[in-house]
Length: 250
Ligand code: URA
Image 1 (cartoon, rainbow, N blue to C red):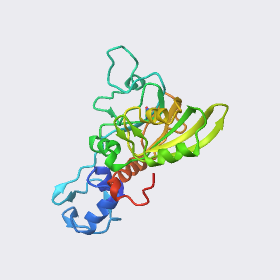
Image 2: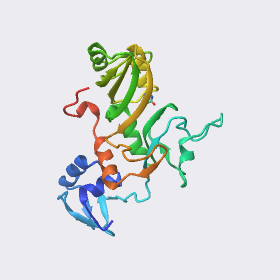
Image 3: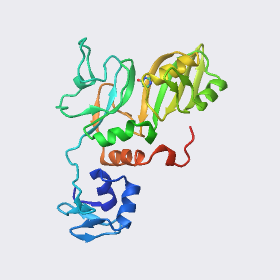
């Protein structure tokens, strides 16, 4: 870091996401080198001592964040008693302390985030934060307007009603439909169970975005570290409980 805005420093340190950080700064609770700073745009440089309510905020320079374009046929787990390949086999570097953010089924491909930032991982996966996950699914049969409506109302599953979700039909043809489904929660095999319930079993499932992070241009089985902007974006996406988010339509 050479220099960074104070509110960004706060979000990257994990102290508070950007909007909340701005409030804390304006409330005079943040000091830089002992002086209260109330301007969120104040420039913080390497070596500056930043404190919130008198407690030092350390930039978590060692935190690691990755996006993997998960192929099918590997499981999201540290190890497998049946000897199956896991996502960790795809990483050449040491992944000690790193864990997957949520799960993808063995037969699902696409965006899988991995990190050692437990706090962020919790907020990204807990349904109360309602972080958006977008799936593309090839399903059997022709998805109807009624299916879209039922998805938007919340399909009743064995473990209780799913939250209202948005489904967009991308194409329909000869007994198959291609749909995009936007979920704000992540229950076990949720997309497959929802589509099964609608009478459209999933044939192919890919997660194309998690909290706005995509695996565009990443070949299947490859990963890359997230950029600083992407990490900050994830902090902002998960900073507010869903009940308080505005424009919160399914
Ligand atoms: N929904 C599913 O059914 N499977 C996944 O892997 C993710 C979401």
